[in-house]
Image (tube, rainbow, N blue to C red; front, side, top):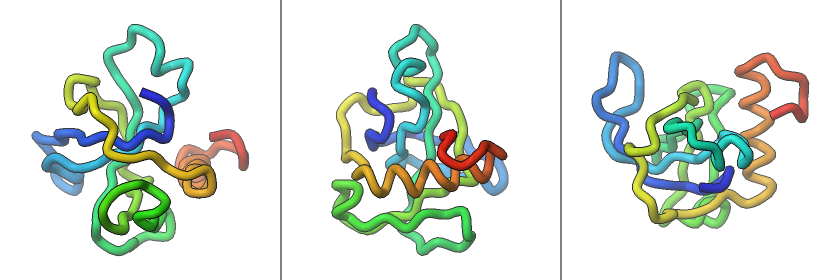
Length: 116
């Protein structure tokens, strides 16, 4: 599963403010990591709701390959077990969309610009 690919993920059970249900997520862990034997993968959940936080990234359907516009919930990035992911891709981020997601991931994790 390459970085930037969008897969469906079962995020239940959820806690408090975490997004739940089955929803599309962006794979954000590095390709080299994704090719290891680790049972985990880093993801950013997507929602159809409008961005409510400056860290959220609005994405058009053309930028994701999904049926509708989405918002990447950057502040909900996390690692999940690969068994939560459906194997078939639902979409893929364009290069410019990936750059916007990366920029906000760097902000959340306190990385220098361009490090994500």
